[in-house]
Length: 113
Image (cartoon, rainbow, N blue to C red; front, side):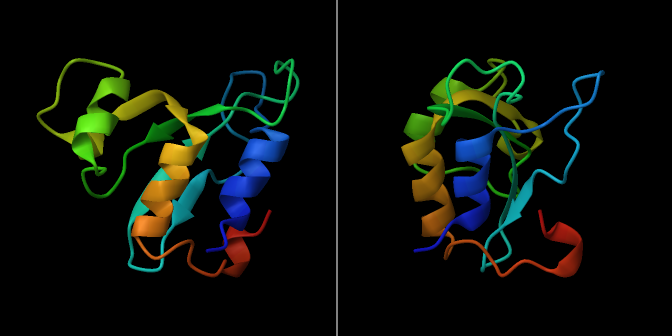
């Protein structure tokens, strides 16, 4: 299954401004409508790319398998996994989540990087 946005993020990092905010839309939309934010280290700060772990934010559904994902929660609050950030998530786990939701949806013009 193709994951071009994920592959690009892993290979090139997430460029950020001087405040640390992503310069480009970091959201990945899957074919079934599932969405999540995917951030890699800023290439200016990363010693080695491609990266092995990513920051995942605000998925539109609880990521599954939950027993694996809950270990990466930024906080211990599991009450609303869709309003959470997941830190240092291994790339293969992110790829499996995207593929479980049908892969990446085709890019619309405003999403192109």
